[in-house]
Image 1 (cartoon, one colour):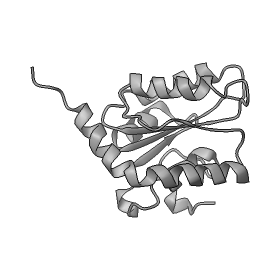
Image 2 (cartoon, rainbow, N blue to C red):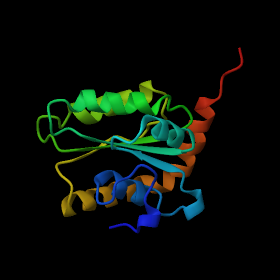
Image 3 (cartoon, one colour):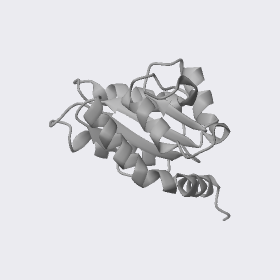
Amino acid sequence: MPDPDDLPAGASPGTAGAAFGVALTSAFLPGDRRVLVAEAAAGPHAVRCAVAASDVLVVAITAAFPGWRRAATRLLDTAGPLAGRAAFGVVTGGWPNSAEQAPAWLETELRHRGGCCLAPALHLAADGVAGLAAITAYCAHWRPLVPSLIGLARREALPTAG
């Protein structure tokens, strides 16, 4: 369980999104961790402000119930434009029905909304020890690339001359 001071903005302690956000940015100095985890029903204004101030966005959705796509769309609509942010997705539940649908849908949505999303979304069967091991392995691979992805996202957000 991460230290509460290490939790990214928007993260609920003990969730896959919180563990993912901490593991992904653990090499950053605490003041350099401008990461938001979008996973809960926080106030729309707070979510938009946090997205505007973030460099890294972790979108955590649960695909274990029939309305998961509608709920995730609402969350992303609340977040607003994602241009200039490195975006990562983590999907929990829904196994095996959503094994291919939810991660692919989330990756497409993050790109469509302007996020720099080069990493495939991580799909976990459930939270817990097995999920934490998968998060740790995934983030160990992507963590060194996060500063470069942030730079790429910022460059992609710049308007082109023309």
